[in-house]
Amino acid sequence: MNFELIPGFLFKMLTEGLPTTLLLVGLSVSIGFFLAVPTALLRVSPNPVVRALPYAYIFFFRGTPLLIQIALVYYGLSTLEWIRGNAFLWPILREPFWCAIIALSLNTGAYSGEILRGAIQAIPRGEVEAARAYGMHGWLLVRRILLPRAFQIGLPAYGNEIILMVKGSALTSTITLLDITGVARNLYARHYTPMEAFISAGVIYLVLVFVLTRLLRLVEGRLSRHLLGPPETELAQDRAA
Image 1 (cartoon, rainbow, N blue to C red):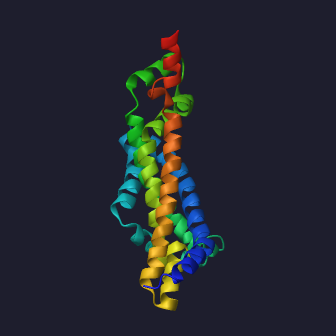
Image 2 (image 1 turned 60 degrees about the horizontal axis):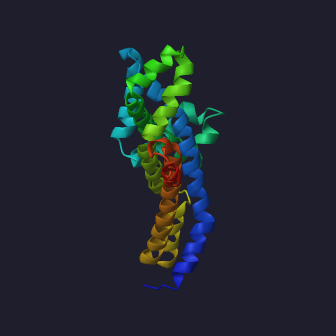
Image 3 (image 1 turned 90 degrees about the horizontal axis):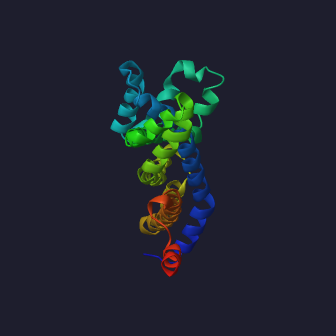
């Protein structure tokens, strides 16, 4: 293995592949979150007819591989004549970047919606009843009680979903996108050095996931401070008093 190639490979992946990966994950997670909120709220509806559509959406995207979903959007939709002739859709769906965004967003939206649904159902019933006793109903109850508490409860699982999206974004290299993995594949094809190329990509993913994990842990700690009790300094002051 030629270790002298690795610094150059790392630089090329950091300058060319990393921005694409971060943009893919950032846009997909953001769009997926806005898909997840209404999906979760519809999933907890007492009306079975209302629950049917989000259930079918979640069932499909959780039950099929992400690679298949990317291929269906990129290769499948482009074969439909009404899309190729649509002046609005075709300029979007002919671009691999936007096809990847659509597939990743729909995928993470389904997983995040199910996470949020479970978190909503895990909210203690007494908190909801207390809010209703104060006169909160409808969207006010959802905005002030259900969604903040659900996000707090579901944050660890949602953090895992974001990390999975970082790693899942590597599959977009199969539709010619030059993310971290795409750049690694090009370097391998150019230099015939698979170990050096993919080890360099693996190191970048490891660092990226490590940083993301630490950030998520900080957010989780801030949202859960009330569950940890008073700081030791306050306890010491109380004992001294």
